Amino acid sequence: MVRILYVDDEEDIREVVDIALSLDPELEVRLCDGGQAALEAAASWRPALILLDFMMPGMDGPATLARLREDPETANIPVVFVTARSARADVEHLISLGAAGVIAKPFDSMALSATVRDYLP
Image (tube, rainbow, N blue to C red):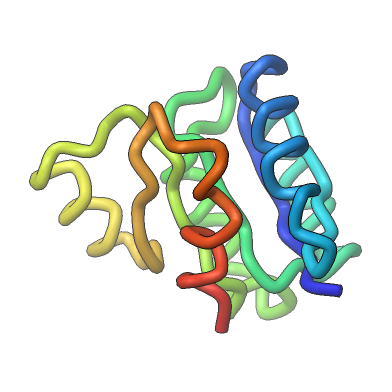
């Protein structure tokens, strides 16, 4: 099983992603509602990939990514942002922060697992 951690403050979107990725029998999905929960889950659960929302209350996506990179236990986990902020400048900025890529919201839920697989190490 390939572990995918999905982080988003919006419950509806977490549910859609959970259902979409759970259709792939080789993916195991864990959900978090914010940056702090993501840091804890990433350190203990060791996902192969983290899908991270950009705009969240408290610790936003870029701040969460920075904290993940500071910890040797999570520094090398690829992070892909899932965000409505997908203009070229936004994508370039997120890549410059160390993101592996960006999946634009709204996304095609039926194609999400294939898109996610493209980012797996």
